[in-house]
Length: 202
View 1 (cartoon, rainbow, N blue to C red):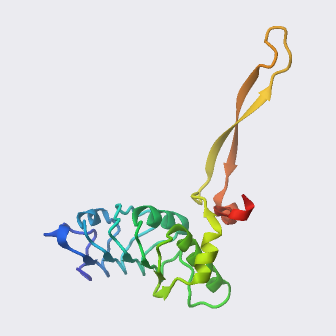
View 2 (view 1 turned 60 degrees about the horizontal axis):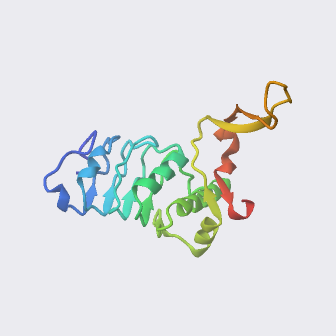
View 3 (view 1 turned 90 degrees about the vertical axis):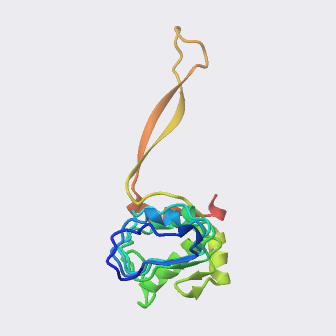
C-alpha cells in the first residue's frame, strides 16, 4: 500500500500470514498496527513521517526494516528503540533522515556517519547491513570495545545517596550514621561522548 496517502497503518485481512509489508511514500506517523503482522520479516516505511518519538511494537520476527526519508532527528532514542523492539534485525536502512549523518558528504559528516554505524552495531549486534553497505569486521571490533549507556539527550535529574558520620553527641550512641540526599543534574547535550564508555575505562 505505497503512495496511498495513509496516515496510519491499516488493519488488513490475513495479517498473520503476511511476511513482507510496504507502506512507503505515505504520511504515516503511527505504527501501532504493525503488531498485527505476527510473522513479518521485512518492513518498508520509506518516505513517511516517522519521528524519533514514534513507538514501534516489539517484533522479534523482523530481520529487515527500511526507514529512509522520514523525520528521525534524535539518534539515541531511535537506536535504543531499534535495539529493544527488533532483537533479530540484520538489515537497517535509515538514510535521508534529519538526525542521521549524511554518508555522501565528505569530511566531518562522513566521520559522524562512521561513528553512527558503530553505535548501531554496538546496540544491534546481529546487524549485517546498514544502508545497503555490509557491516565490516573493523566496525564489529570497534562496537565490541564500547559499552552503551542509555540516556536521553534531555536533562536528567538523578539522586544519589551518601553516608556521613554524625558529630559525637551525648544523646546519640557512638558510630551512628545518617543518610542524606544529594541531587545532580545531567545535561546530555554537554556530554555526548559519555553515552559510550570503552571497556578499558571501567
